[in-house]
Length: 137
Ligand SMILES: [Zn+2]
Image 1 (cartoon, protein in one colour):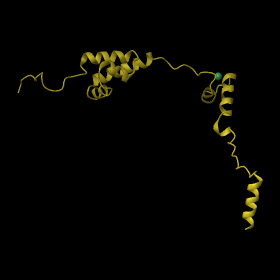
Image 2 (cartoon, protein in one colour):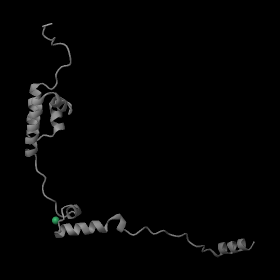
Image 3 (cartoon, protein in one colour):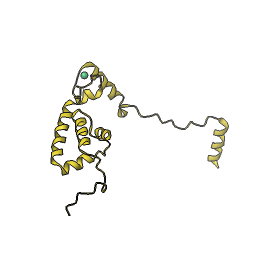
Image 4 (cartoon, helix red, strand yellow):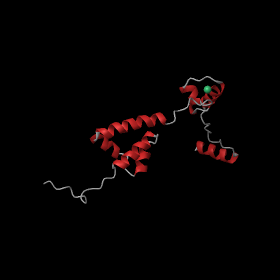
């Protein structure tokens, strides 16, 4: 039983060494995991499965993810002029205060309830006379 494995048997490897290198390069440059997997033509879960079996790949993947997160654009500071900035970032600058005031004024619980119109009274004299006759009988 020392024969070499038949190269024609089994499922072909889709995430070979070249694809792994391409994938890790994409990840290290800040590409998101799903996008990098799509660009390499693999399922997004394939690297997870490989990392469970292959600790060398798992280490390389972790380093690439760390590098990619560092390269990815940092979120900018709070955007002024929004009610959310007033509430979540406690910004009290005039644009944020104005936006928060308007948001509170437009909140559904601050709006007056809709006016319910009552049915109109009988205005026709003939109709009123008929109703009076109906009450008598
Ligand atoms: Zn502000």
